[in-house]
Image 1 (spheres, rainbow, N blue to C red):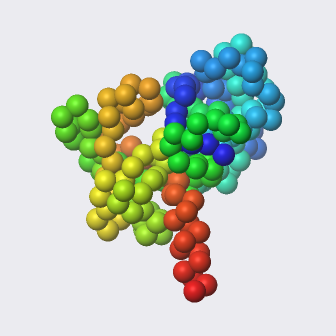
Image 2 (image 1 turned 60 degrees about the horizontal axis):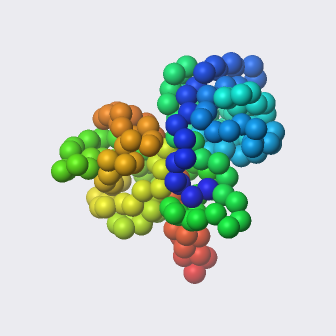
Length: 195
């Protein structure tokens, strides 16, 4: 489990396709404190550490994960939002995030609003019903509050701090981002199906 509070910006250093996709990710984390088998959210995708170096970790990424996320667009040099798994007693500053991406949203608008940036997204139609004004979403692993929803489109505001400590500082129209809907919304919808 994660919180959607990004704690490092990593960088894809190497990619290798051999059955599954294998990635080496550079990090500012103290890798001496990371165990093989640990979970790290990489742009919102929960991945398992398979090898470690002084300033990097390796992950294996299944074809299923590639098909449901924006991982297929990663290239050497791609900047990634990173978050270590939540530990008992950690502050829950964002919202409960599983790292199980539901789909990919597309950036359809970017506009400055004072010092903040308003970003509009188009969600997959099957996921749009789970997104509500003032609700939470995780986008590329970042816990964000939804400002408004219109059909399959929704908007969020990015404050300067978020743009500085994540890869959101370079957001552009046409970007495809990993979308994880709020866990509570998922269960409410499932209960309604049975009600």
